[in-house]
Amino acid sequence: MLKKQRKKVIIVGGGISGLTASVYLARKGHNVTLFEKNEKCGGLVNTFEYNGFKLEGGARALVNAGVIIPMIEDLGLDIEILKNPITIGIEDKILRVNGVESLEEYAKILEDIYPEANKEIDELIYVEKEILEYMKILYGVDNPLFSFNKIKEEGKLLEMMPRYLIWFFKFLKTIKKINELNDPVEDYISKFIKNASLKDIVIQHFFRGTPSFFALSYFYLYLDYIYPKGGVGTFTQKLAEKITEYGGKIFTNTSVVKIIPSKNMVIDNKGNSHNYDELIWATDLKTFYKILDETNLPNYLVNKIEKEKNKVMKARSAESVLTVYLGIDEPSDSFEKISTGHFFYTPKRNGIGEFNKSWLKRIIENYENTSKEEILKWLEGFINYNTYEISIPVLRDKSMAPEGKTGLIVSFLMDYALVKKISEDGWYNEFKEYAQDIIIKNLKESIYPFIENKIIFKFTSTPLTLEKMYETSEGSIVGWSFEDEIPVPSGIFNMKKSVKTPLKNIYKAGKWAYSPAGVPTAIITGKLAADMI
Image 1 (cartoon, rainbow, N blue to C red):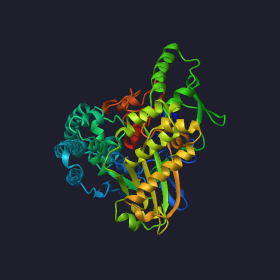
Image 2: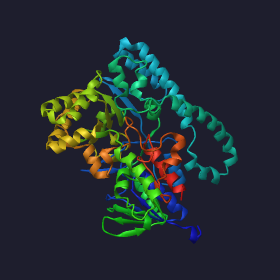
Image 3: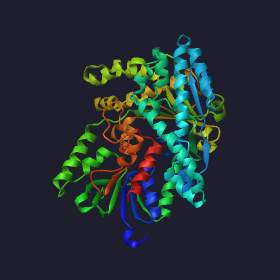
Image 4: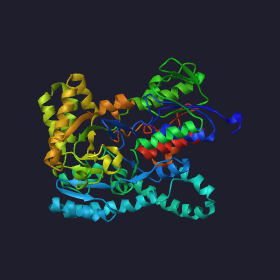
């Protein structure tokens, strides 16, 4: 790169989108500085060690989506990718998902549990099969943002062009279907499923208001999960190493507390000032607007900023998660007999019902007039009838736990607003312990009776934990709520637009820049932001 083209770029936020932007800009030869508030990069794609166990702090595994593996290959990252097979369970009926054919086995389980709803189950499976075919198209080729260099280097550009052209026309048809199935999954599925318990079992592990296409594509995603050896944090660790290899600088334990666009300058938490030619904000968007100094900006620009700021500040984040971490003095073989290392398990067939609807809403809106006893009663039912995402890292990678022992990560969706009120009311620790005890009791009484008296350690993470650790508004793991107006672009054709801000040399990336969000879309926005520079 010519010296005059080399720009000084600051990236704020060392999560997956910030790391992506940084590594591609550093590879281009730009002067890259990445600021990360925590001790290490990774954000919600991290793996930590505790008492000899390796556990995930955020994402339990990664969805490839035609993005992650091509990116690893493009950057030459030294990562061994392991399989991440999924298991689904309702009460004592357990299904290991081995391929598309497992959808029929899933239907049989549902028919055994809800024999009165056979026609509704048939309709559900028909819709899921249809979406499965569209997902094959959507992720049918590696994303060219990350695969183009490899294709070019191998001299296969002309060979691949017809394939991409055919795929593109199929892709347009898929986009049409995505737009048709944009209704909240609760509304769409109610058109053909009247059995309340069945409806809950199918959708209660999705974020409320999730667009139907993406919610009901879960069976395809089950087949697309991957797991880096050493945990998901291996991926972000290798990205950070590659950034420094390309000459980029990473400052950890450093956050940006003020942005002064009139001077192209940021101030960090240690009082140091840093100038930039271009800036990419890859962390919480509400924080961005809180610390943005509008001094000396022209009025028309201030008006544009204020308009965007108002939309962002009044928007609400999606639900967060409550997670219980357990160390068990039991060999992994005992768990392997039951499921794979990634297990979506519902201990009771009843469904979550009003525990996640009117009852929860009533408690939040009338918290001051609601007794602790009623909240605990609600919490017990909410946990008893919920769906758990259970991650067992050692079943995917034997190095993830001490020999003869097993680590469990058990989580489910949880509203930030309620946990915040409980914390302000002074009984947050009691709430955590109560939730933890109910989960352990349910596991003992259902799939893991052998863990009785074998728990080495237990601790719990809540939406408040995630908010504090990762500076993510309301502890969100996927960005904005689908239930309210989304303040950022959505729709596949708006992804490039999503990285822009009112300021021409400041871009945004990550789960707050685009909706719906996940690790693949966070990566894509990071790459798109880098490509703008």
